[in-house]
Length: 353
DNA sequence: AAGGCGGGGAA
DNA sequence: TTCCCAGCCTT
Image (cartoon, rainbow, N blue to C red; front, side, top):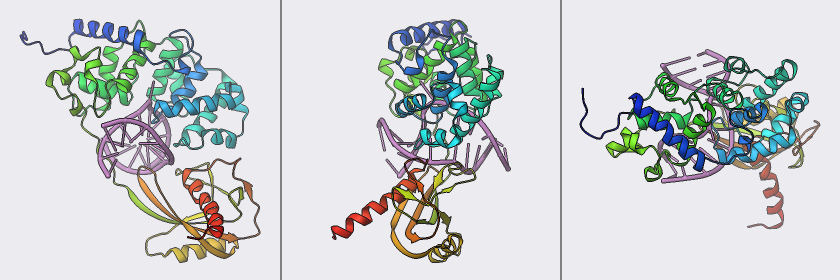
């Protein structure tokens, strides 16, 4: 069937070739200059590419830049990372979130230090913390393997090119595989992601600056921002908790958190207020466990973590327990907020309202 | 297939 | 506020 209008058909082979050429040409002149992109195309340093990809999972590039520099200064090679204690690795990651990334990266570095770097998608995929996206990124960028990445940028760009409101993971991967430029897989993957991050942005895409708007169905429809449809997200859960500060904001009693939430980090002794419980009861339980006495309320802090909003009552207490250096420990933002109350409390003693 | 996992930027 | 960010792992 012949189409007489000038509506683009990005699923046609000739159009795909033109689209590849246009996007790669744009990338060669307008791609981002990022520190982990040093080295020859398709032959980058696997360690640096790997670290950057883990850091950038669910983390914007602007933020990743700071941590990349900090992390590589602390652990310049995979051997240095493998030999470091986990606490040091988490300290370098402190504030970046999703701390399982750091712990998995550390575990994987110990495997790589012993066995060498994998040299294929499948080999990378077997390392902890390396999923389909990261394996494809490292394989294409450091080894020149023809693997298409599928991340949030790729999903959005492809959803718009094909006007697909609800693109499934399988659909995105299939389109990305078909569109991949097998001659320059690394550059192609970066080009698609750069386009998504700088031009084909979520809220207000800059279609006037887009090198492939002529191939885009969403643009032809005049409503690029309608694709993809927003994802349904779980409601934020309210959580009440109680913590005690034994010591001060420099040295305090800290416990290692276990489980999936903030697991591996250190923090103030803390307990959640369960249903049907009062904060007073939880404080009492906490003090019994620590053999602590003489509590005084320091204040309250709140902290939102995507899926839950934590309201924390913080009490100063005294107990015969060893304190640790706050500066040398990896703490969550929530614990730093709680520790900040100590400084405010001291100040207010001298400058009452 | 769905939910959990941090913290912050942009609109 | 809302939505999203170079995703991965567990259930």
